[in-house]
Image 1: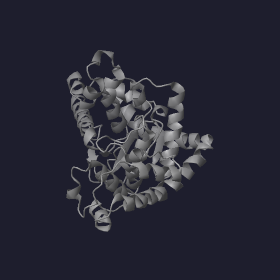
Image 2: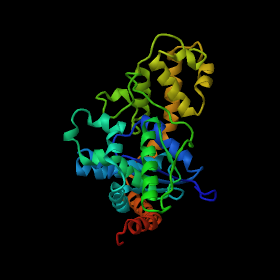
Image 3: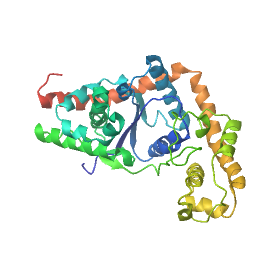
Image 4: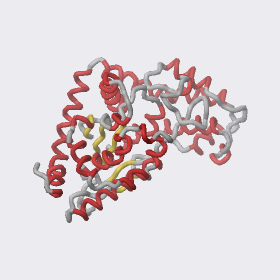
Length: 337
């Protein structure tokens, strides 16, 4: 990467309905902070959602719902480029070109493929297997210098780098920037279930009490925190002493993520107190964060035309940015474009 190249970050999120606190603290608020650190492109990964069966009407509505949630949370369409992946056909086109470079062995070793396919590999979609190549296209299309990733996604960035290097080498070009993992945007909180501190907070959990939904009322938030699973011990004065207390660790971690404090700072304040004192304070902090967000989300839900306008504007900007790279990729492999 040349020293004068501006930092450009690309990241996508699958448009699944039912956003919850785990999505917000685990990814979305980190994106919001990134906007002040780099040039950002954020997309709703609706092409990726084709790897699993989903009702078409649900897919369409989920794209709008996710866009509304992102903007309500602080993603600024004037500051970042926000768009639906499928609205920029260059993603799919570049994916197919990169399929000539990617190798079956590389994809078959991907941990996510192994985990999601399980023992039923023959019954899984080609899209699920090829998912990482489309991810590489998402990144390389925009000459992204950095990609924000969690531990579970580092392998995908390594694959993107391998594809970029092999393509550049095979076709004697310097077309693709080889991206780096992006550690900016602050830390992303790993939010666990309110009913089981060993499981991630998830919309697929049958118990609604296991999660805080972004659309929950203030009273519902307070009730869910009041009933969240804990233990009878008082809170310690340091993070190390929370080991083995998964539910306590989860609630303290949520409080720290919401207030922007460290876990140790939170514990210093509540040391020696039980959850009877801590839970109301946590509920108040969550309500202060989520109440204005929920109000903005409801405003966008009432104005789908405005959401569509913002997404179309973002798609036009993304298309213009990616077009030169796609054209050069066609030329590099000897195809007319």
